[in-house]
Length: 97
Image (cartoon, rainbow, N blue to C red; front, side):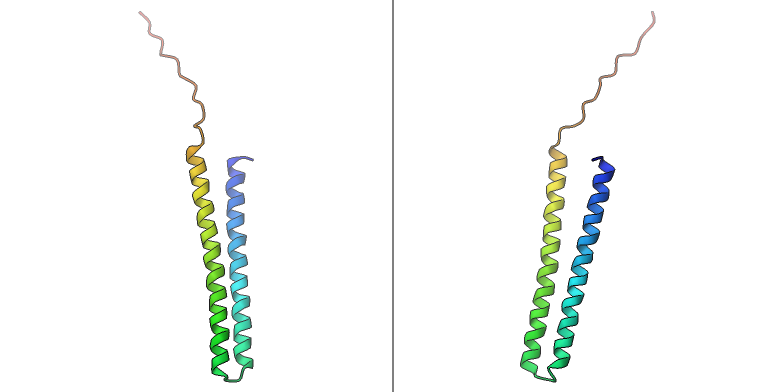
């Protein structure tokens, strides 16, 4: 793969990973709102539902960001330790007497 394809692939992975997290968080929030609405004021159960929803959203988001940070760090370390491309020496300039 060329460098441009690698960059585009990483952008797509980041975009779709973030989309998956946002959709999942919205689904969790929707289920929590629906659950609270159906409980008709039972405060202790509502607190449990909201706590579980908050925990799920925060843990999923933190896991995604942590994995992304580790992946970016590993890629930058691999790029830094890769051997530099060989440079062809330039011949000295010709001088005329």
